Length: 509
Ligand code: NAD
Image (tube, rainbow, N blue to C red; front, top):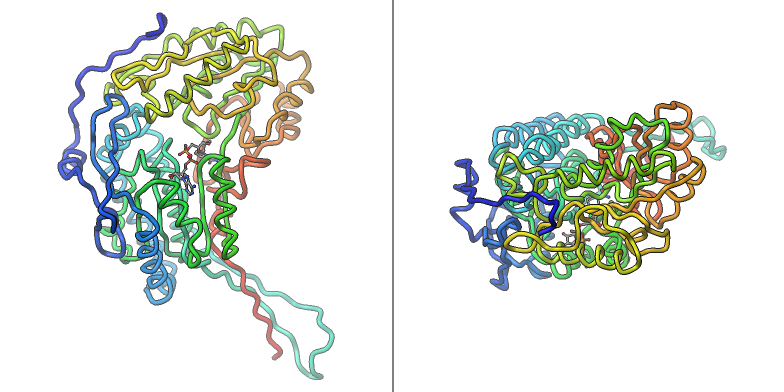
C-alpha cells in the first residue's frame, strides 16, 4: 500500500431488505417481453463485488440470438403495442410512476449499485439514483410536449384557387438499442430510457457486463409501474457479442451509446448496414484551468474532486490540471494533500470517500498508465501504481507533475483517479493546452474574473464548460461532446429529439 493512503475494508453485510431479497436469487435472468429468461446458449457471466472480489450474482451471457429475440419483441411492441398510440399524458403518468418507484426503492438500488460497482454508498444514494429519478420526471414532462410546426410553403405551381397547407409531425423513431457503460450504471441507463420512452419508442437495453444488476432491478420496477411488456427489454452480456449484435441489428432504428471512443467507432461501423441513427456519448480528457485570481479555498478541493470523485471513473473527470504559474506549486501541493487525505474503503462503510475501480482489469489498466507516466519522467506527487485491497482493485488518488504534452498520460483517457498537472503563463496558453486533445467533452475554469471566465468558456472546445465548479449534472443540462467525445447530447429537452423523426405533411386544400 502507498504510504500516504488510508484504507480499511472490514466486513459489510447487505443492509437493505430489498438488496438482500434481490441477491438471494443470485442467478439473475434478463427481460424479454414479459418473460424473465436465460440466454438461449445457457451461458452465464459472473458479476463480482469489486471491493472484495466476491461473487455477487451471475447474469445471462446474451448473444446475437437473444438480441434477435428481444428486437423482435420490441418491434412487435412498437408496431402493435399500446405504447406509442396511448395518450401522451398516459405515457407521462407511467414514466412518473417509474420515478416514484425508483424513489421508493432508493436505498435498495443505491446499495445494489455500490455492491456491484464499488462506489461509496453516499455517491449512489445522494447523487446517482436521485439523478435517475430526475431523468424519468424530466422526460415524463416531455411526453406531452412533442410538437411539430405549421408551415406556409412558397410553392407557386398549385392548381388555381387552391391553397397549400403544410405541417410537421414528430414521430417516434422506432426500436432503440441502448448500450451503456459501468461507471454510473443506473443514471446513465435512465438517460437513455426516459427520453426514448417519452418519445414513444420501444427499446432493447444492453447494460455493461460488470454492472447489470440495477438495470435488471429497474426493469422489474418498470413492469410494476405498468410499462407494457415489450417496451423495455434487457439483454445482458458481453459488449463484443450482445452489444455488437444490437448495434448491427437490421431491425433496430437507432443506437444510443455511452462508452469509450474506441467502441463508439465500432458502433458507427456496425450501424452502417441499415443506416440506423446513432448518438454517441464518448470519452474525455477534460481540462481544469485555475487562474491566478481563483478562490483557492474552493479551487483546490474543486480540482481534487473533479478527478477523484467516483475514483475518476467519470466521463467528464478533470484529468488534466492547468494552473497559472504563480500559484502552481500551491495548487498542486494542495491537490496532492487532498489526494492523500482521501480514505479508501468498502462502499458500504460510511467513512469511505473513494471506492475501488470497477474491476481488476480496469485497476491494472490504470496502474499501467501510472507506470508509463513515471517511466516517461513524470513525478508522482501522491498515490502510485500499486493495486490495493484483496482484489487489487483500489488505486490511490494519484497526481502526476512534470508532464509533457506528448506523454501518454496527458493524451489518453485513463478513466481512473489520475490527474496530470501542468503550469501555464497566460490564459491564451491555457486555452491552447486545453484544446490540444482529440477529446472535447467538458472543462472547468476557476477564476474570480467574470470576463476571463466567459472568454475562456467561449474559447475552449468542449460540450460543457463549468465555471468555479466541475461535474455539475442535471436532467435539464445537455451533456455530450465535440470532436472525438461524441455526437449528440443527452439530458436537456432537446434529448427527446434523439428519438424522434420529423414527418412533413404537405396538402393542397
Ligand atoms: P466501453 O466502450 O468499453 O463499453 C461501453 C458499453 O459498450 C458496455 O455495455 C460494453 O459491453 C459495450 N461494448 C463493448 N464493446 C462493444 C462492441 N464491440 N459493440 C457494441 N457494444 C460494445 O466503455 P466502458 O469501459 O464501459 O466505460 C467507460 C467509457 O465510457 C469511458 O471512455 C467514458 O469516458 C465513457 N463514458 C462517457 C460518458 C458520456 O456521457 N460522454 C458517460 C459515461 C462514460
